[in-house]
Image (cartoon, rainbow, N blue to C red; front, side):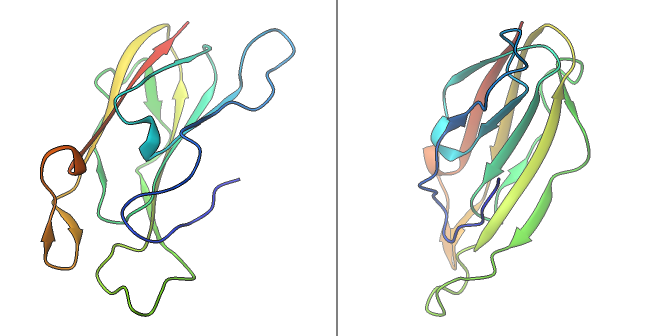
Length: 135
């Protein structure tokens, strides 16, 4: 289950792999901001959901579109409960779902220019990257 959060950083689990298919294969993998800079190992045929907790994130195409296959363009959803005192925080999520369709390695990246109202993102706060290894 995905939940929306406010602000530019989330406090959610970085990688979640629900019970597998009974044959040792994980069928669903979920990543968010805390997975930044990590390598995620997943089974062929699994579904990966990326949830970034700010509407300012722009998910880029996977480095290998055969290994990590987008189901549809990323969807941006404003959060239903955001602090009234937080205009311009990008309150909401950007969610993308991928099929892990071939054995191999691909890199998922996201970038944002804004970290809030009149606050330019630079350095590590501006970029997100996860390496996905499918076996």
